[in-house]
Length: 134
Image (cartoon, rainbow, N blue to C red; front, side, top):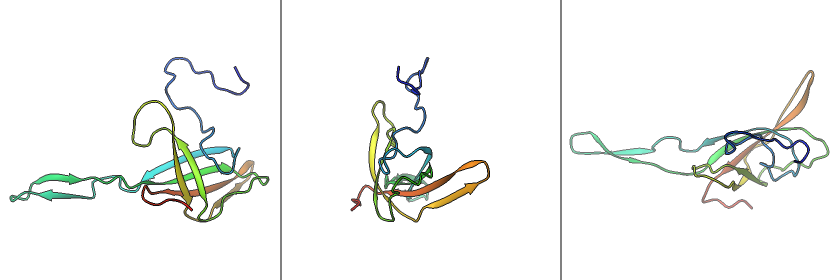
């Protein structure tokens, strides 16, 4: 077993930690990733002649993500509009392998510094299935 690798007993399919989730900058220490679907609920519904709902309209139109990393001054952080590959368990469910999403940096980074704690940088990423990052 490699040094600093978790050894999981019991249910081994549970996702553990944040290692390898962000492709840029390589080797960044990721504290957390929070993904919010663009459309987390039906975007509309169709009613019958009596006004009762008979159809919901669902749309899978990507997500926005907040990625919090330890701020390492030796890293070159991606700039506004840059492509970042976010590798996570399948967003739409399913078992097994990870899914890589080509996201783009959708805003300027947030910096956070406090006493007795390392500085963090928060990247706002956006994934839309119909938009190919440059």
